[in-house]
Length: 76
Picture (cartoon, rainbow, N blue to C red):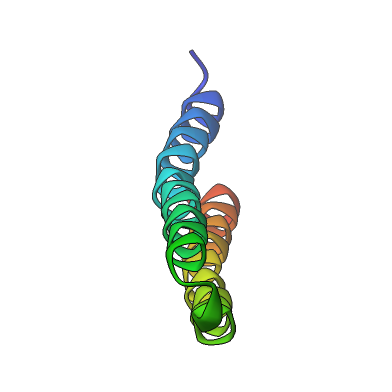
């Protein structure tokens, strides 16, 4: 196999595994927030605000993984 192809394969696998964490995290955040709102509808505002904040931070990790993958594909 060509070394360039192996490099791209490694970058793809690394980014795929790196995106697994933020994907699962976003699912758990949504699940927990909806469960909390279902149990206590009066707390919808604070729960929703915190959910959006945490989801943004979790999404940032996925963006960092993507940037590192692009840099590895270009540089290495």
